[in-house]
Image (spheres, rainbow over the protein chains, first blue to last red):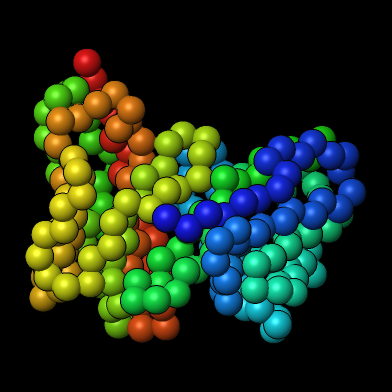
Length: 116
Length: 109
């Protein structure tokens, strides 16, 4: 399957700081990338859909000014958690949609964010 | 509304066979996906069905009935490493994935 990388894999930061997470599709061009959040023992929650060259579409309840998404190229999308607080601590996972007949989403390995 | 239902948890024995069911009601249908997610890790793609019938891939098979809004994932010759959550997701008319809550599969020796 297609390969998606995510960096960093772990982040520990102080409350009030901003954290940037990168998501790259390594062997294909992804016009659409997705950002998910998952709290322990809970389901995946879609935060936003990111299309290359345009503004991201956020799900209801997700603050777009707090979770800034940039999709500047066909292989890179970034999520910036601004002014992070302890309640933002979670597992953030990106996925890239591989085109063709199936439009399969391939996931990055995820980023664990811990805000102290 | 859009809805995906799958059992919350299932238990099976090593070496046995288990079937995880998924029923769905969505606005449009562009295929059904199964993903595996081990604890603490991101989901990995297992299978895709868009036509009715059975798709076999090694020890794993996935079945789809569009008229019934139903799919199942069949795991044969269960191994301890198959202990994970299995996520059913449907691609709707806009190619957006609607996710089920996942089925936690516990394998016992």
